[in-house]
Image (cartoon, one colour):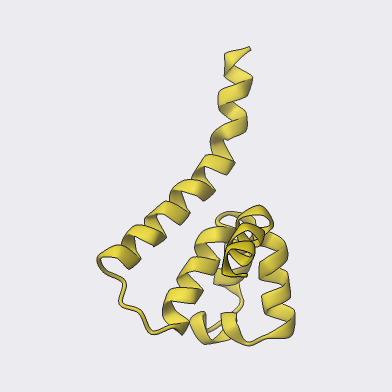
Length: 90
């Protein structure tokens, strides 16, 4: 079951963010305000979810947890710039 949840988060991070905002206070406990989750929705949705998970589970932002956060940033950044690589290749 946890593997299915991870796949859903990776496949539909913006949908998961909307559901988290509507049906829980998970994002409110991690971010004290609306602007950061809103910017995260548009630019780095997976990073926003991972950071909220790390803060809500009271995990330190060091070592393997920091590596998980960096991987989330790389995945989000790859989604932003991937279209440009394909466009230049033509």
